[in-house]
Length: 557
Image (cartoon, rainbow, N blue to C red; front, side, top):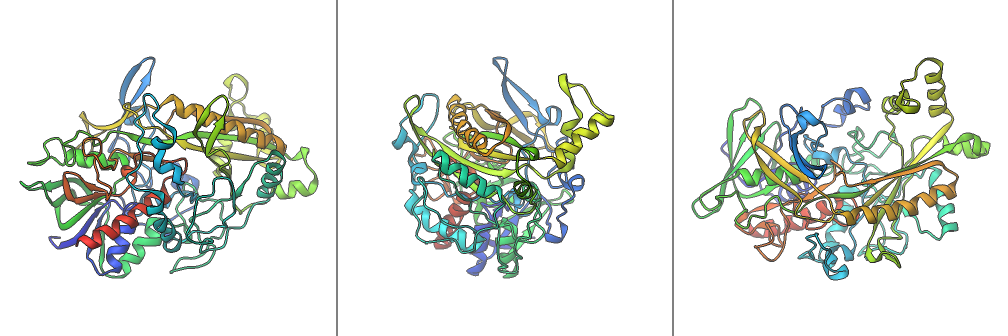
């Protein structure tokens, strides 16, 4: 395993796939180091017990914990999540968490790249402008559409971003009747819904099948190949060229640098726990935001006494998640006509509607502030999870027998729930960052990441505003029991930052090319590079930036 490669990539998710694809397609030798296993379409089950309720694609927390530092009763309290529960592992598998995404694909907007310039400083938040513009990123957003495979329909709406192409390369997905309900009710309220672009194929393409509308999408691997995961859309293609080697079950723990500060090799544990080394001209770190910072901090060297790229002390700082939350409304069949009930009972198609009317909020009470996105979706299809919530009655008392049967009958056969998800900026602060825990070790004896998860109160204010607008829509549609939950709890599957890029080495880890300021042959291309996250899910932006960086790496080799 001493082969010398052009590029070594650590991680295999959205930040890794485009690099591997581009290098392999142009004849460069590349190796992908992935801690998880290598699964294909035939391995993915839609069995709730077999996958979602077991640690099948993520490590056991007793083997690989994180130490989570949360603000409780006026104090920061740190505890291993092997004890407290909750996990920031979301896809230890070739292709990473992109295997389990729902495929929501929204571009960031021009305004997202200049948050400080557009809206000014916010006290307690480390908001900055990006060192690249939307115009520089736009060709790569378009490239993702073509290569990864985006299905959709471009519809003009108040926040529609500029595009170099008129439409998406694949037709939009079939809409659930709920989509028409949303359209009609939105028109009465003056809202402007639009079809949600999805990284899900509606036509067979490049040895991948079209979606067959199984319903089981988010949190599940795709066994048709329709979902545009890094593995299905990019790594499989790269591997078939013969120029890309993929090494699963490989735990990277140190990037080794020489006396000049240049990284010369990667050290990792293989499946048997034996130390292996990879030599390469360039190294790409794409482990996910928390783990990329951890790897850099562990990579101490002659010129990197505090960790690779950390001479400024910025590695791990300005970690961000996605702010917002979720809301829901219940549609009781008894409230609607027979034909409407048949529509509600339709299974398979996605709701496939989004709102960005308030991507920029201009309100007399709030002023002009950055807003966000609302996506509408079915409740998660897991029946066990749904049924389990019904076992408690009033005052938290357990119910059983006929009472429980009646609740189950009504929940599964007499109603339908529509949900919405709110996405708005998680502002970077000094109270959200990654460091190494000095005491807690993983199963390899390595220090685990310690993650402080403080949020800014501004995030809550924006999220509640968007939720209130969304609740009005559900009411207009005829829903009951309308609720929403906006909190400062970070979603475990939407993280970025920790190695932000920028022009000033004192306040950033990477330059605009996503190279370490302190080591030019090391690039970071997962969500870690993002100084702010926009008000959309991150995957499309990570893909696009990774294609951009791939061009830079190709020109340097």
